[in-house]
Length: 391
Image (cartoon, rainbow, N blue to C red):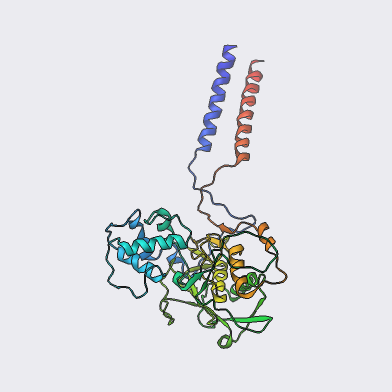
């Protein structure tokens, strides 16, 4: 008996060693792709900028955990950021210091309040991460919050907290009912790596999301000069007083009614399909388009992170579905589309989707079962081998 187990033990041990050597061989991390999708690299004219972020915002990590009374080199750049987006007075002293003073503390508190962050008054991790995120160029100062006692003319008794906002004065498009607004794309200010067909499809879907909830229709026209809404891609200083700043900084901006200007930063790596575009810096065009259309209609920024009108958007993230906060805000300006039911929002899919293909592959359960099957087979094979030799 003992020779049997001695022989079997040696055979099984040899099998196990072979399996371990096979399973531990060097390998590169696997990447996951949607089914039936060809694995290919999509090159664009911005490929050299894929991982380069807005230089100034990226350096804001040095301010992590700074509090009132701190002195950190470059703090003046952070103050300029807060002034740009409405958290410090627009005409305050331009000679900012690097001291974390009372004015900066007030700006941080206001920023945390407006963006739905933990209100700490210090530059904690959540606040720094938010500040460094790519965002809309529309100033948060340019809007005013809706009143909590605002009445809505619908029969769905939904109890919600209102975080949407408007531009000052609640401007809206004034047209005869039924209202139709035209939009057109600049024939010269374009990005060449995206086809016009893809861009038109993206904007058609984005406009339709808003028209589904309000009695306003949108119509594309080739007459750019006479269109109500004029859309174009621009780089740097493009003549409207709101210069763009490069990759992963300000993504786009749009003006309040009835201005109609809608500008996107041509330096960004715009994507119409995050499932195919593998750039780490890819920005979903449809998400930004849907957000900026909200500004074109008169909405300001929301404090709800899931809202389309939240000011920031991470790379490789798609957020296109209107939530209650977005819908309540725009309906307060234009009324409700008679075919829309607010209850439909309660059965909507997840609001934001992240597309990240830089993940290491972990074996799923079927792979573990396969390994168990191999070990079991080795056991019985060794035992059969022994019987065949000794009988």
